[in-house]
Length: 386
Ligand SMILES: *[C@@H]1O[C@H](CO)[C@@H](O)[C@H](O)[C@H]1NC(C)=O
Ligand SMILES: *[C@@H]1O[C@H](CO)[C@@H](O)[C@H](O)[C@H]1NC(C)=O
Image 1: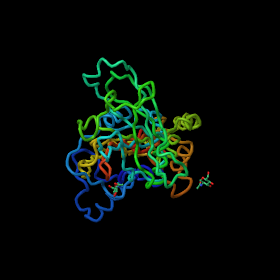
Image 2 (image 1 turned 30 degrees about the horizontal axis):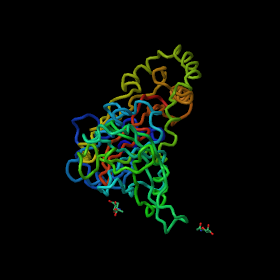
Image 3 (image 1 turned 45 degrees about the horizontal axis):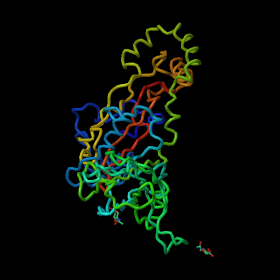
Protein backbone atom coordinates (compact mmCIF):
# COMPACT_ATOMS: atom_id res chain seq x y z
CA UNK A 1 0.00 0.00 0.00
CA UNK A 2 2.89 2.39 0.23
CA UNK A 3 5.92 2.52 -1.98
CA UNK A 4 5.73 -1.08 -3.07
CA UNK A 5 2.38 -0.36 -4.69
CA UNK A 6 4.44 1.02 -7.55
CA UNK A 7 5.42 -2.46 -8.59
CA UNK A 8 1.89 -3.75 -8.35
CA UNK A 9 0.27 -0.73 -9.93
CA UNK A 10 0.45 -2.16 -13.42
CA UNK A 11 -1.64 -5.11 -12.28
CA UNK A 12 -4.05 -3.51 -9.89
CA UNK A 13 -4.90 -0.15 -11.40
CA UNK A 14 -4.78 1.62 -8.04
CA UNK A 15 -4.89 5.01 -9.66
CA UNK A 16 -6.80 6.77 -6.93
CA UNK A 17 -5.95 4.58 -3.99
CA UNK A 18 -2.83 6.32 -2.68
CA UNK A 19 -2.88 6.77 1.05
CA UNK A 20 -1.93 9.71 3.16
CA UNK A 21 1.75 9.73 2.26
CA UNK A 22 1.30 12.43 -0.37
CA UNK A 23 2.43 15.85 0.59
CA UNK A 24 5.05 16.78 3.16
CA UNK A 25 2.58 17.95 5.78
CA UNK A 26 0.48 14.83 6.07
CA UNK A 27 0.74 12.44 8.98
CA UNK A 28 1.79 8.83 8.77
CA UNK A 29 -0.35 6.88 8.94
CA UNK A 30 -3.61 8.73 8.46
CA UNK A 31 -6.04 9.03 11.35
CA UNK A 32 -8.19 5.96 11.85
CA UNK A 33 -5.56 3.51 10.73
CA UNK A 34 -4.80 1.21 13.60
CA UNK A 35 -1.39 0.71 15.15
CA UNK A 36 -1.52 -2.86 13.85
CA UNK A 37 -1.94 -1.76 10.28
CA UNK A 38 0.81 0.77 10.77
CA UNK A 39 3.34 -1.73 12.06
CA UNK A 40 2.43 -4.25 9.37
CA UNK A 41 2.86 -1.54 6.76
CA UNK A 42 6.20 -0.40 8.16
CA UNK A 43 7.37 -4.01 8.24
CA UNK A 44 6.41 -4.45 4.61
CA UNK A 45 8.17 -1.19 3.77
CA UNK A 46 11.31 -2.50 5.47
CA UNK A 47 11.11 -5.57 3.26
CA UNK A 48 11.10 -3.31 0.22
CA UNK A 49 14.40 -2.00 1.56
CA UNK A 50 15.64 -5.56 2.08
CA UNK A 51 15.51 -5.60 5.89
CA UNK A 52 13.68 -7.53 8.55
CA UNK A 53 14.07 -5.04 11.36
CA UNK A 54 15.20 -1.45 11.44
CA UNK A 55 18.91 -1.39 12.33
CA UNK A 56 19.62 -0.35 15.91
CA UNK A 57 21.90 2.67 15.90
CA UNK A 58 23.23 3.94 19.21
CA UNK A 59 24.12 7.58 19.36
CA UNK A 60 25.35 9.84 16.65
CA UNK A 61 28.00 8.34 14.40
CA UNK A 62 29.86 10.07 11.65
CA UNK A 63 29.73 8.17 8.36
CA UNK A 64 33.08 7.77 6.54
CA UNK A 65 33.77 10.63 4.14
CA UNK A 66 34.44 8.09 1.40
CA UNK A 67 30.87 6.78 1.67
CA UNK A 68 29.38 10.28 1.71
CA UNK A 69 31.37 11.19 -1.40
CA UNK A 70 30.34 7.98 -3.10
CA UNK A 71 26.69 8.63 -2.30
CA UNK A 72 26.90 12.15 -3.74
CA UNK A 73 28.53 10.75 -6.86
CA UNK A 74 25.84 8.18 -7.60
CA UNK A 75 22.75 9.97 -6.29
CA UNK A 76 21.17 13.41 -6.58
CA UNK A 77 19.85 15.32 -3.55
CA UNK A 78 16.64 13.29 -3.61
CA UNK A 79 18.55 9.99 -3.63
CA UNK A 80 17.63 9.28 -7.26
CA UNK A 81 20.34 7.45 -9.21
CA UNK A 82 22.15 9.82 -11.56
CA UNK A 83 23.48 7.12 -13.85
CA UNK A 84 22.40 3.48 -13.46
CA UNK A 85 25.71 2.27 -14.94
CA UNK A 86 27.95 4.09 -12.45
CA UNK A 87 27.87 1.32 -9.86
CA UNK A 88 28.51 -2.22 -10.98
CA UNK A 89 26.54 -3.91 -8.23
CA UNK A 90 23.78 -2.42 -6.08
CA UNK A 91 25.49 -2.36 -2.68
CA UNK A 92 28.62 -0.77 -1.23
CA UNK A 93 29.54 -1.68 2.35
CA UNK A 94 32.18 -0.09 4.53
CA UNK A 95 33.75 -1.71 7.59
CA UNK A 96 36.07 -0.41 10.23
CA UNK A 97 38.90 -2.50 11.59
CA UNK A 98 37.89 -4.43 14.72
CA UNK A 99 41.39 -5.33 15.92
CA UNK A 100 42.61 -1.75 16.26
CA UNK A 101 46.01 -3.32 16.80
CA UNK A 102 49.33 -1.50 16.98
CA UNK A 103 50.64 -3.83 14.27
CA UNK A 104 49.57 -3.43 10.68
CA UNK A 105 47.07 -6.21 11.08
CA UNK A 106 43.41 -5.71 10.38
CA UNK A 107 40.26 -7.66 10.98
CA UNK A 108 36.82 -6.80 9.69
CA UNK A 109 33.62 -8.41 10.91
CA UNK A 110 31.76 -9.43 7.74
CA UNK A 111 28.78 -11.04 9.50
CA UNK A 112 26.37 -8.52 7.94
CA UNK A 113 27.23 -9.69 4.42
CA UNK A 114 24.77 -12.35 3.27
CA UNK A 115 26.31 -15.45 1.75
CA UNK A 116 24.14 -14.96 -1.30
CA UNK A 117 25.66 -11.53 -1.84
CA UNK A 118 28.07 -11.52 -4.75
CA UNK A 119 31.36 -9.82 -3.88
CA UNK A 120 32.45 -7.89 -6.98
CA UNK A 121 35.40 -5.97 -5.54
CA UNK A 122 36.86 -5.48 -2.11
CA UNK A 123 39.31 -2.74 -1.22
CA UNK A 124 41.44 -2.07 1.81
CA UNK A 125 41.71 1.69 2.35
CA UNK A 126 44.68 2.80 4.43
CA UNK A 127 45.58 6.38 5.28
CA UNK A 128 49.30 6.94 4.80
CA UNK A 129 50.65 9.51 7.22
CA UNK A 130 53.32 12.03 6.38
CA UNK A 131 56.78 10.61 7.14
CA UNK A 132 58.24 11.55 10.51
CA UNK A 133 60.98 14.18 10.52
CA UNK A 134 63.90 11.88 11.22
CA UNK A 135 63.58 9.93 8.02
CA UNK A 136 63.12 12.92 5.77
CA UNK A 137 66.71 12.52 4.56
CA UNK A 138 66.35 8.80 4.03
CA UNK A 139 67.84 7.50 0.80
CA UNK A 140 64.60 5.60 0.15
CA UNK A 141 62.08 7.25 -2.12
CA UNK A 142 59.75 4.30 -2.58
CA UNK A 143 58.72 1.32 -0.54
CA UNK A 144 56.98 -1.88 -1.52
CA UNK A 145 53.73 -2.25 0.38
CA UNK A 146 52.16 -5.73 0.30
CA UNK A 147 48.84 -6.87 1.71
CA UNK A 148 48.50 -10.50 2.80
CA UNK A 149 45.57 -12.68 3.80
CA UNK A 150 46.37 -14.51 7.03
CA UNK A 151 45.79 -18.25 6.71
CA UNK A 152 45.00 -20.97 9.18
CA UNK A 153 47.78 -23.54 8.70
CA UNK A 154 45.59 -26.23 10.21
CA UNK A 155 42.97 -25.83 7.49
CA UNK A 156 45.08 -25.32 4.39
CA UNK A 157 47.46 -27.96 3.16
CA UNK A 158 50.52 -25.80 3.08
CA UNK A 159 53.13 -24.33 5.34
CA UNK A 160 52.27 -20.81 4.22
CA UNK A 161 50.81 -18.63 6.94
CA UNK A 162 49.76 -15.91 4.57
CA UNK A 163 48.80 -15.34 0.96
CA UNK A 164 49.78 -12.28 -1.07
CA UNK A 165 46.73 -10.31 -2.25
CA UNK A 166 48.12 -7.04 -3.49
CA UNK A 167 51.46 -5.27 -3.69
CA UNK A 168 52.50 -1.81 -4.83
CA UNK A 169 55.30 0.77 -4.72
CA UNK A 170 54.37 3.80 -2.68
CA UNK A 171 56.39 7.03 -2.48
CA UNK A 172 57.77 7.49 1.02
CA UNK A 173 56.96 11.20 1.13
CA UNK A 174 53.33 10.97 0.08
CA UNK A 175 50.37 11.28 2.42
CA UNK A 176 46.74 10.28 1.92
CA UNK A 177 44.58 7.28 1.14
CA UNK A 178 46.09 4.18 -0.42
CA UNK A 179 43.75 1.54 -1.80
CA UNK A 180 44.60 -2.16 -2.13
CA UNK A 181 42.43 -4.74 -3.85
CA UNK A 182 41.72 -7.69 -1.54
CA UNK A 183 38.75 -9.28 -3.31
CA UNK A 184 39.99 -12.90 -3.17
CA UNK A 185 40.27 -12.94 0.61
CA UNK A 186 36.89 -11.34 1.20
CA UNK A 187 35.18 -13.82 -1.15
CA UNK A 188 36.61 -16.72 0.85
CA UNK A 189 35.61 -15.09 4.15
CA UNK A 190 32.04 -14.46 3.04
CA UNK A 191 31.80 -18.13 2.04
CA UNK A 192 33.39 -19.30 5.31
CA UNK A 193 33.25 -16.77 8.14
CA UNK A 194 35.51 -18.89 10.35
CA UNK A 195 38.42 -18.59 7.94
CA UNK A 196 38.62 -14.83 8.51
CA UNK A 197 41.90 -14.32 10.35
CA UNK A 198 42.46 -10.86 8.99
CA UNK A 199 44.83 -8.96 6.74
CA UNK A 200 48.49 -8.23 7.30
CA UNK A 201 50.44 -5.39 5.70
CA UNK A 202 54.19 -5.65 5.11
CA UNK A 203 56.41 -2.75 4.05
CA UNK A 204 59.76 -3.52 2.40
CA UNK A 205 62.52 -1.39 0.98
CA UNK A 206 63.26 -1.81 -2.71
CA UNK A 207 66.17 -4.10 -1.77
CA UNK A 208 63.61 -6.37 -0.19
CA UNK A 209 64.40 -5.95 3.49
CA UNK A 210 61.42 -5.63 5.76
CA UNK A 211 61.28 -2.18 7.39
CA UNK A 212 60.16 -1.38 10.89
CA UNK A 213 57.31 0.70 9.51
CA UNK A 214 59.00 3.99 10.27
CA UNK A 215 59.49 4.60 6.56
CA UNK A 216 55.85 4.17 5.72
CA UNK A 217 53.35 4.70 8.46
CA UNK A 218 49.60 4.12 8.19
CA UNK A 219 46.99 5.61 10.47
CA UNK A 220 45.56 3.10 12.92
CA UNK A 221 42.11 2.90 14.44
CA UNK A 222 43.67 3.23 17.88
CA UNK A 223 45.92 6.26 17.57
CA UNK A 224 44.47 8.42 14.85
CA UNK A 225 41.40 10.42 14.06
CA UNK A 226 38.27 8.53 13.03
CA UNK A 227 38.39 10.12 9.56
CA UNK A 228 41.72 8.29 8.92
CA UNK A 229 40.73 4.87 10.21
CA UNK A 230 41.62 1.78 8.17
CA UNK A 231 38.56 0.76 6.23
CA UNK A 232 37.37 -2.13 4.12
CA UNK A 233 35.05 -1.27 1.23
CA UNK A 234 33.00 -4.00 -0.43
CA UNK A 235 31.20 -3.60 -3.73
CA UNK A 236 28.58 -6.32 -3.89
CA UNK A 237 25.35 -7.28 -5.58
CA UNK A 238 22.45 -8.90 -3.77
CA UNK A 239 20.73 -9.88 -7.02
CA UNK A 240 17.68 -7.74 -6.30
CA UNK A 241 18.19 -5.32 -9.16
CA UNK A 242 17.00 -8.03 -11.60
CA UNK A 243 14.96 -6.56 -14.43
CA UNK A 244 15.37 -2.96 -13.32
CA UNK A 245 17.34 -1.77 -16.30
CA UNK A 246 15.04 -3.38 -18.81
CA UNK A 247 11.93 -2.01 -17.16
CA UNK A 248 12.96 1.59 -17.80
CA UNK A 249 12.27 1.37 -21.51
CA UNK A 250 8.87 2.95 -21.03
CA UNK A 251 6.24 3.54 -23.65
CA UNK A 252 8.40 4.96 -26.41
CA UNK A 253 8.81 1.63 -28.20
CA UNK A 254 5.05 1.24 -28.30
CA UNK A 255 4.20 4.71 -29.48
CA UNK A 256 4.51 4.40 -33.28
CA UNK A 257 1.55 2.02 -33.47
CA UNK A 258 -0.24 4.03 -30.82
CA UNK A 259 0.17 7.16 -32.85
CA UNK A 260 -1.56 5.60 -35.82
CA UNK A 261 -4.58 4.83 -33.76
CA UNK A 262 -4.32 8.22 -32.14
CA UNK A 263 -4.46 10.08 -35.46
CA UNK A 264 -7.56 8.15 -36.47
CA UNK A 265 -9.28 8.54 -33.16
CA UNK A 266 -8.67 12.25 -32.79
CA UNK A 267 -10.78 12.91 -35.91
CA UNK A 268 -13.83 11.60 -34.18
CA UNK A 269 -12.89 12.80 -30.75
CA UNK A 270 -14.99 15.87 -30.15
CA UNK A 271 -18.32 14.46 -29.17
CA UNK A 272 -19.81 16.19 -26.12
CA UNK A 273 -20.04 12.89 -24.25
CA UNK A 274 -16.27 12.51 -23.94
CA UNK A 275 -15.42 16.09 -23.13
CA UNK A 276 -17.88 15.83 -20.28
CA UNK A 277 -16.07 12.74 -19.02
CA UNK A 278 -12.73 14.50 -19.30
CA UNK A 279 -14.10 17.35 -17.26
CA UNK A 280 -14.80 15.03 -14.36
CA UNK A 281 -11.28 13.71 -14.01
CA UNK A 282 -8.00 15.19 -15.11
CA UNK A 283 -6.09 13.17 -17.67
CA UNK A 284 -3.47 10.67 -16.53
CA UNK A 285 -0.52 12.54 -15.10
CA UNK A 286 2.38 12.31 -12.67
CA UNK A 287 1.83 13.97 -9.28
CA UNK A 288 4.13 14.30 -6.25
CA UNK A 289 4.25 11.68 -3.49
CA UNK A 290 6.85 12.54 -0.89
CA UNK A 291 8.05 9.64 1.28
CA UNK A 292 9.46 11.23 4.42
CA UNK A 293 11.80 8.91 6.35
CA UNK A 294 11.58 11.12 9.41
CA UNK A 295 7.78 10.73 9.55
CA UNK A 296 8.19 6.98 9.18
CA UNK A 297 10.64 7.05 12.09
CA UNK A 298 13.71 5.96 10.17
CA UNK A 299 15.82 9.11 10.40
CA UNK A 300 18.01 7.47 13.09
CA UNK A 301 19.61 4.94 10.77
CA UNK A 302 19.20 6.51 7.35
CA UNK A 303 21.98 9.00 6.69
CA UNK A 304 20.71 10.14 3.27
CA UNK A 305 18.30 11.09 1.83
CA UNK A 306 15.83 12.47 4.38
CA UNK A 307 13.07 11.38 2.08
CA UNK A 308 12.35 11.22 -1.60
CA UNK A 309 9.67 11.98 -4.11
CA UNK A 310 8.28 8.67 -5.34
CA UNK A 311 5.60 10.45 -7.44
CA UNK A 312 2.34 8.80 -8.25
CA UNK A 313 0.15 8.46 -11.29
CA UNK A 314 -3.37 9.73 -11.26
CA UNK A 315 -6.03 10.66 -13.76
CA UNK A 316 -8.31 9.26 -16.35
CA UNK A 317 -7.36 7.22 -19.37
CA UNK A 318 -10.54 7.73 -21.31
CA UNK A 319 -10.87 8.00 -25.05
CA UNK A 320 -9.17 9.64 -26.89
CA UNK A 321 -5.76 8.89 -25.44
CA UNK A 322 -3.34 11.63 -26.41
CA UNK A 323 0.33 10.98 -27.04
CA UNK A 324 1.18 12.68 -23.73
CA UNK A 325 -0.63 9.80 -22.00
CA UNK A 326 1.95 7.43 -23.49
CA UNK A 327 -0.64 4.76 -24.23
CA UNK A 328 0.25 1.25 -25.26
CA UNK A 329 -1.55 -0.03 -28.35
CA UNK A 330 -3.47 -2.26 -26.03
CA UNK A 331 -4.59 0.68 -23.90
CA UNK A 332 -5.63 2.64 -26.99
CA UNK A 333 -7.78 -0.25 -28.22
CA UNK A 334 -9.23 -0.77 -24.75
CA UNK A 335 -10.17 2.90 -24.46
CA UNK A 336 -11.88 2.71 -27.85
CA UNK A 337 -13.81 -0.43 -26.91
CA UNK A 338 -14.78 1.30 -23.66
CA UNK A 339 -15.90 4.41 -25.52
CA UNK A 340 -17.88 2.50 -28.13
CA UNK A 341 -19.44 0.40 -25.35
CA UNK A 342 -19.13 -2.62 -27.63
CA UNK A 343 -18.63 -4.95 -24.71
CA UNK A 344 -20.00 -4.40 -21.24
CA UNK A 345 -17.73 -4.17 -18.22
CA UNK A 346 -14.64 -2.98 -20.07
CA UNK A 347 -13.07 -0.20 -18.00
CA UNK A 348 -10.81 2.52 -19.28
CA UNK A 349 -7.08 1.64 -19.14
CA UNK A 350 -5.06 2.31 -15.97
CA UNK A 351 -2.93 5.34 -15.31
CA UNK A 352 0.31 3.78 -14.03
CA UNK A 353 4.05 4.48 -13.86
CA UNK A 354 5.60 3.42 -17.16
CA UNK A 355 9.13 4.44 -16.32
CA UNK A 356 10.71 3.83 -12.92
CA UNK A 357 13.97 5.08 -11.47
CA UNK A 358 16.08 3.66 -8.66
CA UNK A 359 16.97 5.47 -5.48
CA UNK A 360 20.03 5.21 -3.23
CA UNK A 361 20.06 4.91 0.53
CA UNK A 362 23.07 5.61 2.72
CA UNK A 363 22.43 3.97 6.09
CA UNK A 364 23.89 2.31 9.17
CA UNK A 365 23.42 -1.44 9.31
CA UNK A 366 23.01 -3.61 12.45
CA UNK A 367 26.74 -3.60 13.06
CA UNK A 368 26.89 0.20 12.58
CA UNK A 369 28.74 -0.12 9.30
CA UNK A 370 27.74 2.42 6.69
CA UNK A 371 26.08 0.90 3.63
CA UNK A 372 25.12 2.44 0.31
CA UNK A 373 22.35 0.54 -1.41
CA UNK A 374 20.51 1.05 -4.64
CA UNK A 375 16.83 0.11 -4.88
CA UNK A 376 15.29 -0.28 -8.30
CA UNK A 377 11.84 0.84 -9.42
CA UNK A 378 11.26 3.29 -6.57
CA UNK A 379 10.43 6.55 -8.35
CA UNK A 380 7.80 6.99 -11.04
CA UNK A 381 9.64 8.73 -13.87
CA UNK A 382 6.55 9.12 -16.02
CA UNK A 383 2.98 7.93 -16.17
CA UNK A 384 1.07 6.34 -18.97
CA UNK A 385 -2.18 4.64 -19.81
CA UNK A 386 -1.77 0.89 -19.79
C1 LIG B 1 30.56 -9.97 14.32
O1 LIG B 1 29.45 -9.17 14.58
C2 LIG B 1 28.29 -9.87 14.97
C3 LIG B 1 27.13 -8.89 15.03
O2 LIG B 1 27.50 -7.69 15.62
C4 LIG B 1 28.57 -10.59 16.28
O3 LIG B 1 27.43 -11.31 16.68
C5 LIG B 1 29.76 -11.51 16.10
O4 LIG B 1 30.09 -12.12 17.32
C6 LIG B 1 30.96 -10.77 15.56
N1 LIG B 1 32.01 -11.70 15.24
C7 LIG B 1 33.25 -11.55 15.68
C8 LIG B 1 34.22 -12.61 15.25
O5 LIG B 1 33.60 -10.62 16.37
C1 LIG C 1 47.89 -32.40 1.40
O1 LIG C 1 49.14 -32.61 0.75
C2 LIG C 1 49.52 -33.97 0.67
C3 LIG C 1 50.90 -34.05 0.09
O2 LIG C 1 51.11 -33.12 -0.92
C4 LIG C 1 48.49 -34.71 -0.17
O3 LIG C 1 48.82 -36.08 -0.26
C5 LIG C 1 47.10 -34.54 0.44
O4 LIG C 1 46.14 -35.14 -0.39
C6 LIG C 1 46.79 -33.08 0.64
N1 LIG C 1 45.55 -32.96 1.38
C7 LIG C 1 44.60 -32.09 1.05
C8 LIG C 1 43.40 -32.06 1.95
O5 LIG C 1 44.67 -31.35 0.08
